Length: 192
Length: 399
Image 1: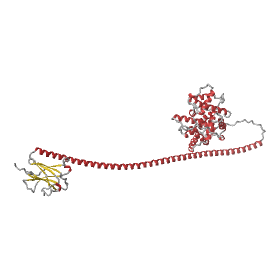
Image 2: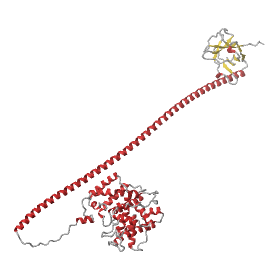
Image 3: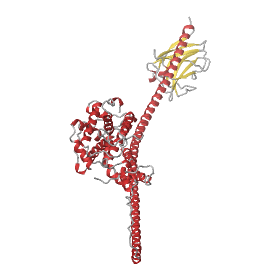
């Protein structure tokens, strides 16, 4: 498991900032490439926005709630989804066929993963195929619920139901590993 | 997210609805009403453990773990120039946040690290008083204090040295990063300029090629235009020449017509005219020449009519008419005018040529009319070597 950079970043350590960029830069860049494909958005601007968001919220990271990698990935996912929505608002986006339907969830390389990440991947394998598919489209490709519905050709409500059911089943499977702590739940936008 | 697609609220319990909203938030953006609903539900379930055992961070941690796991498999790399700029932004962020904020919440680990260790109150133990022991203890204490002071001083010096080294290293790293970013930027600008230069060169080459083509087309066009202009000028000159010739011909025809009409009028209106037919001589120019002379002595007016008389070259010779008046010396006939025979002066219909007689003296009693070929401009006295036609006036016998 990599060293936690976020507490040091919260304390204003420049070396931790540089190390954080080197550790997670590739992950977030790849995520931005996939999520913003077809939106015409500026990848560098998006990645910088994600990192600033991570640094700004570094003091909220609680290692008892999960790994730093999962914390950062969650922020990146939400910020990039938000950029998708803004890009779609700015102009009419015409999506091309990127072959989402043909793509299948990648096999995990468990050896390199943090403990909680590894356990989440193991639990994912136990889900139903339809739950895996919508989670793959949402979390790997960054597709909105509406685009998943269009891609898979199922109603929007079904997409939501499958996503919720998949995440709830994962939570049940991982109940012991994600035990609640004494911190209050954090919600994106709750402070607004 | 469209609120109309939300499932009915509270029918299955607030904790289930909370789970749904947390799952929706983990996989996509929530609408403002959904966010408000989520916050309300979270406030209602502010206890660390809700009745369903739910915890908000569990859902997002699971989704984040999956994202991280797949991203680790794809192995994307941050481009170096992007990394350099991002590092600049990060170091700027670190500088801005290097002083601890009074309002910023302290992270749990940091909080733990800053917590003072628990203090346990020490109870004094009664000891028997002893001066030697006290002095020994004082000396030992002084030595211990000195050692501790030295040790603390050395530790502080070492710590300050480490801090200085770290700061120097950070500054060096920052300088290196900035230099790398500058170099990348310079390379980028150089490449862009080179590309622009190549593009400009290509445009210049295209423009030069187009200019050459245009100049060749212009030269060809000018040649064509000059040739057409010359042709047009020649055509116009020919047309002008033809018009002049036609005009001359028309003028001559009109004059011939007028002279012919005047001759006819003389013949019709006067009974005292003399009309004598020409007699051709033996010279080649006289061969086949016919015609006559009409003369009215009272009016001193008359006309010569020829048919078959050859055209003369006015630059070399001219015809001249003569009247032999019986009251004068036959060696010196009266000049009756110089004329030319050309196609232009000939009547096209009949081939006749009518010349008005222009006697320079009063003719009293003409004995004969004659036409000779003379030098251009005529002569005062003819040598009669080249007489073409002759018309002697035969006086009818008195009845």
